[in-house]
Amino acid sequence: MHTARRTHGFTESVIRSMTRLASEHGAINLAQGFPNFPAPTVLKEAAARFIHDDLNQYAITWGTKRLRDALAAKYAQWYGLSVDPEVEIIVTCGATEAMAATLLALVDPGDEVIVFEPFYENYGPDAILCGARPVYVPIAADAPLDLDRLARAFSSRTRAIIVCTPNNPTGRVFKRPELEAIASLCQRHDAYAVTDEIYEHICYGEPHIPIATLDGMRARTITISGASKTFSVTGWRIGTIVAPGPASDAIRKVHDFLTVGAPAPLQDAVAVALETLGPDYYADLARAYRARRDLMHGALVEAGFRCALPEGAYYILADFSALSAQPDDEFAYWLTREAGVAPVPGSSFFGDPRNGRSLVRFAFCKTEDQLREAGARLRAAVARV
Image 1: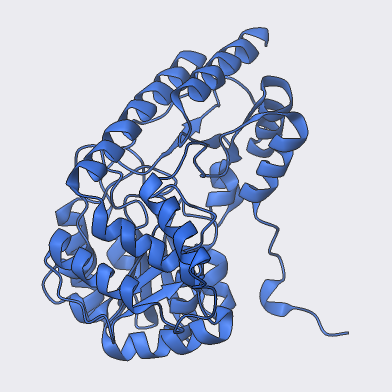
Image 2: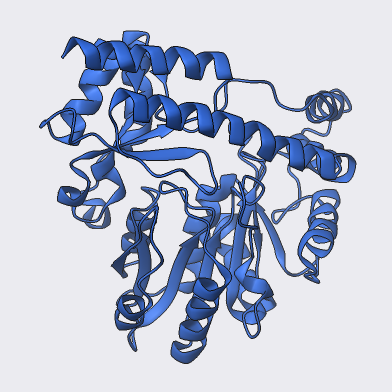
């Protein structure tokens, strides 16, 4: 019998399994990062209108023209990037597919892919599925990037580095000097920067800087983002890629064979949101998430967790070693069953699970009422032990 060699050793997504566990125990799900509040009305009304107007068949594989044009306008307005919507944009089934399609298109067996850790759990497996070797470089939620260690991670076999900023799960927003150092290394070693910028509009101080805007990086950066986090529609699966022409051509081919295309009516609904929602929407988004961040961080600290205040995204990676000697998975299951709050075990964000054994991640993309209830449950559970 043939074995699935490239998936040998993979486990099911820990994040999704914690969602199921939360449902089984009636726990507040702070594991998987999906909001429990409504998406913008203009977005929902546009989607319903397009469905009723029978925009229900395949869109062009790399995205509807309306959405590609809206994305090109957005990158020009926000970041001063000139993007050709006919050549350089691909719309995918979520940013997760965008990352997989990009690496499958650009990375060959035997290559190396640098991955900052802790990392969103798909990055390492994506590299392995390409036959490449992930090379892990640690980052901290509250310390500068170790640029010397990063430089040593690059080699003649480095094909790409994955940069997630604002970062999941640490909440770090990479500073300009850090991005410039990454850019310099990419140019020196002829490597791509594959950037996951899905949280680009959820920053609490430091502005988001797309690495593609730095000198010399436009032609070697693959910029990934999407609608899920900005518009609170994680179930719509609308991801986006901006890539230079030759890379875009290769990624489009892989995307075609992976999923054919993203949902047509939802693509044009996202275009309407991009065309309609102005600066106030994005400012309000960041302001609301800042309030949720402060609420959740305060609750965790009060309950006895140690954690840095996130600079962006909507996660807190918390150290529970002062509360329990259990390993992370057992502690996460205990919190779910006994406290009624579900986090993600920290080991799922590391190449070597031992590095995350005292950590759990909480998502605060919930209403403030639900976060207050989660905080009360955590404090009560800790008090009991």
